[in-house]
Image 1 (tube, helix red, strand yellow):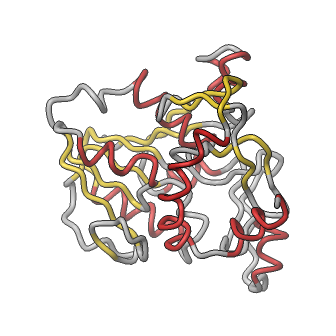
Image 2 (tube, rainbow, N blue to C red):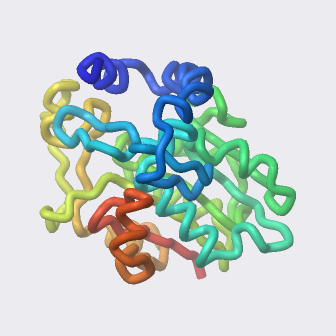
Length: 257
């Protein structure tokens, strides 16, 4: 069963997985009833989370069986709730690229958000477009969210510049990527083209680069100012373990003057 689960997670295209997840979440709370881990997004407790990831970086006990949050989603939620004005501001224009299913409905229903989503293929996105050329006006959004997208695109810097362009002066955003902290410099090699080789070198079959510790420099080159939000500076070890946050992950908060 575990092998079948891993195969399905890694083989089924994301739009289909999104549709299949809806019936699964109806039975998940019963199958995983318990109190060892907690998801701060859906506020449900479980015996454990599901495993997730490719063969190269498969991780145990990380995927919430109800709302499908991973470590990065729970970290972002905690930042939005505890450190930002995302839920309190009177009105925010928000652009969310590749909207995560665990956030989409909640953000759509927030009365203080003018919430627009975009993606190349996602069935839950409002607009479909190529991130290299966003078909939206300059200086439009107070908040821009773009997580685990920039490792997929041909020209990451161009996409970052587009995100900077549509952000208002004074705006801010969250732009997470898979990051190998053992690498000083981002790893890219145009000769790596097969899904098998991309998974081996970049951790996933559809990635075209693996960002290193220099990722903040990419964001700065696109024009952003960058602030680091480090979980261990805000949560004790017991909380990090209960929420199953990723050890060593840094949340990069970008802003535009």
